[in-house]
Structure formats: C-alpha cells, structure tokens
Length: 172
Picture 1 (cartoon, rainbow, N blue to C red):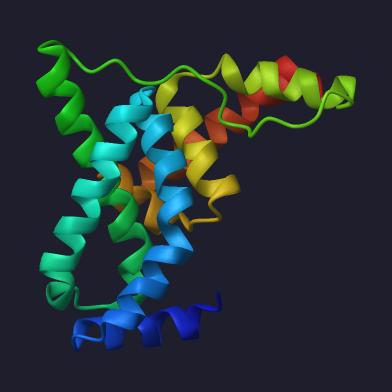
Picture 2 (tube, one colour):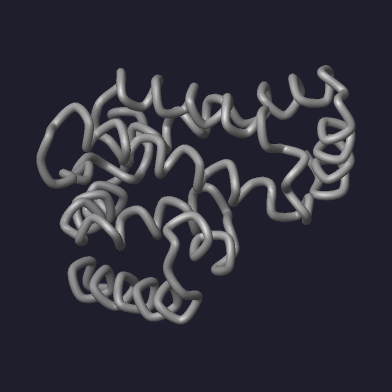
C-alpha cells in the first residue's frame, strides 16, 4: 500500500468510513500479530494485545493528528497492549521475547543466512525489536522511536550498536 493511499484511508476512517477502516485492518492485521508475538513471546497475548490495540485504534482514530503517523501509532498500541497483558498475566517484571526476529525460511537456507539468524538471536531484546521494526517492518527511525517510546537518538545509537555487534559476530 502506498503511503498516500494509506493516508487517504486513515482520513476516510477518521470520517467514519468503515470500509476504509476494514482495509487498514486487512493490510496490517497479520504484521501486527507477528509483532505482538515478538513483544510477548505468547501467541494468546499477541492475539489479545492486537485485538485490544484495534479496539483502542477504532475508538481514538479521530484523535490522530497526522495520518502519516498511523503505522507507528498502530505498532505502539500493539506494543504497549501486549506489555500490559504480560504484566497482568505474569504478575512480575516483563520478560521480552527471545525468539527469532528474522522470519523462518526453508531448509535450504545458506550457511550465511543461518549465521546471520544466530547472530541476531544473540542480540539484546531491545536491539532485536529495533532490527525487526527498522528492517523487516521498514519503519523510519522516528517511527521506531514512537513505537518504543524512546528518543530518535537512542534508536540511532542502538541500531548502530546492533549493526556493529552483528558485524563482529557475523564476521562481515
């Protein structure tokens, strides 16, 4: 979906167009579920957190001032909905997902791909989330910062650190 088309859909959804909202839902639902799982490590929490995020989004979409911020706003809603559910269900400190950030690929993947996946898996949880959002979800530094509620400078430095760690571990 083109950025301009997405912005038009957001504006239409803000005006009460249910079909526009449904198209946004269809476009992002599976990616948001995957991200919810990356945050929580639990498929049920990912499902519930994503559903809660869509409810919040539907209730508050008119409050979004800039349609360009829609994607990062959605990811932020999923992120914090899943974290809230984790806190409620665990009753303890948040345990971030340690699973792969890189999607699974077929058995014939190269040794380089396997080495890269292993190196990414050894990154700290926050850096893995940033790699996921920045490279796989193709978010900007600003969007990643909004989702994770950290400064853009922190995102840049942590992404740089993650790339440096990958370079060292991957022997690039």
